[in-house]
Image (tube, rainbow, N blue to C red; front, side, top):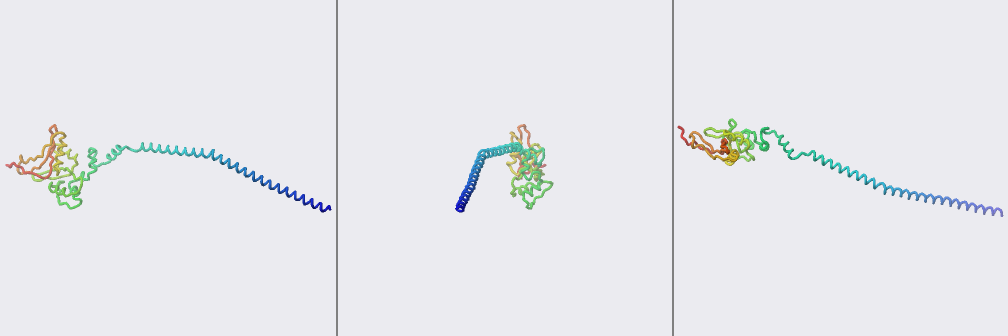
Length: 266
């Protein structure tokens, strides 16, 4: 009897003890899980609060700083461009002055022409080669001059552009000879002297040069002095320009037509 009672008491105590242990373990785990969940929620709230309060402000500040820095850099670059870029006027003055083509005593307008025209400063022989574009030229050059009719033949055949309009000239009793080419200004400077003479193949260019010299005066010609001179010499057609003061230019010869003097030489 005692043994049965003791055995039942033992099983009851053991069962209660195990139930108590099971309850204790389960309760501790539940509490631990609950505490972990609560801690995780708190951490998330802290992170969310930090993102809401700190991150937007930091991004805004950095964006503002970048924007201001970029604007300042553009403004500085613009100011630098304004300071360093030369004006068109200065640019052209510097570049034209750099061309050492004719000389310092030649007007600026003449310098521009000399830079464009390839034949400025050439001798007549080189002009002939240029006109023929490298082809054979059957014209004799004597002391820097060629006979006018032979030269006009080459000039007419040439396909070159910007051919010279005016040339130095000399003549004897029978022929006229063409020398070095002249720019418009060089030709005008030459005939401004009463003893300066030029030649041009074209009637209109001769008349224009006379008008430039006259400067509001009058154009004299075309004229030819064959009627009052001896019949052993040929005379060529030409113009003069006459200023309002009465000062005449030198001879401005044109073309190749000539007349033998009409006065019989005694």
